[in-house]
Length: 167
Image (cartoon, rainbow, N blue to C red; front, side, top):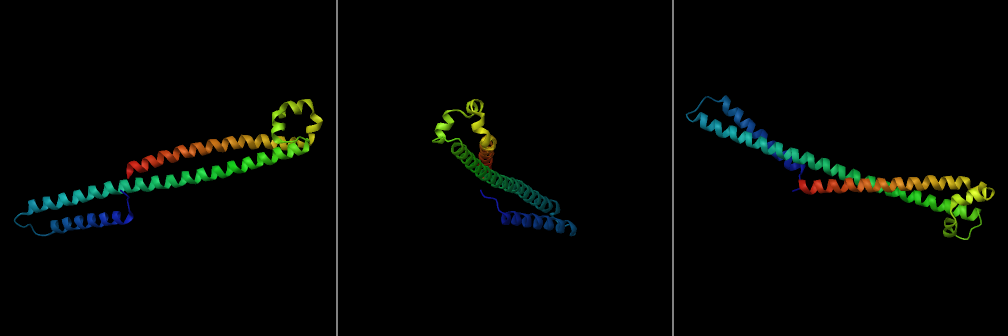
């Protein structure tokens, strides 16, 4: 069931009309069947109030869940974009390192292990230290953004499950 603002307003109007009818009846002089009629009107007023409040609670829950779903989808998208940006930075840094150190390919360079090379041939790596640092930072950020995506996806799945339970 999809909760709508118009249905909420309709229930609110029904509730107010039942309340007004009950109040108007109480202000009139007492007829023959006053208590019976008053009981019926009071019961109607109470039932419309319960229906309205139940629907309003569900409607607010629905809106909140819908808002959270939108928020988590946005978080997933933003984290995905950041992760892609970090992977591009990593690739550019690797390419720069490979070119500056005269390696034939990125794979070959990675096979030879950056850390051991920097210890064995520090002169060769003096020009690319900024790229090495940038690559290291970017790879750490890449992992962080991957974790953020996973966290947001978990939250999104939980909110979608809640939405299905509400509907």
